[in-house]
Length: 261
Image (cartoon, rainbow, N blue to C red; front, side, top):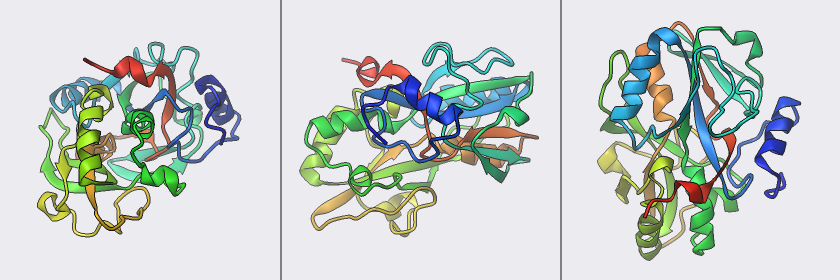
């Protein structure tokens, strides 16, 4: 996939059924986002869960009931078709992965668009830092941890993290850079020693793909929006829809618009 394609073009390709792959490195410079779709009856609880857990769940947009356009971050988008892949959950169980959710859409749905760490990767690359999963053409590795999020209504979850290996010096640079992107998960939540946060095997991620960790590098962990999918498993809603991990919504807002002083 040409990294210079515009967000609107990529969404159009998704809508035509011509793009179904993970999105790291796609539309460089534009914000990528997680998606969670829930019935209105659960929307307040989920909104509160995001408010209480801004590291894994930084909200970028919330639709009106029944609306399937992300008007703030991607005007003209159709959240039913414009992501590469979606996960369908019933009673908290993942039952299907699809590329189009129009047949599942309901008039009582509310869609939540949540920031993603792919949005700070352009800044890491510009600073000369390696982003291993992009180098290797893979999805980012993601792991469930022993860290707990704050509960809200029916929603509770452990924290899910994404991992990028870096040298100690590079990790310090990455902390400085990503701290400026709180709407893209911000600074890392943990560096090194994965067992301290309940990760036993870096070569077996719970989501995404394992990547090479070179000699002298340490694993650096960022909060991850896939945390919401664990929360759905705990809450067991009648139906819920999310992006497939790593297959994000490409928005029209630029990464730099998320930067805080």
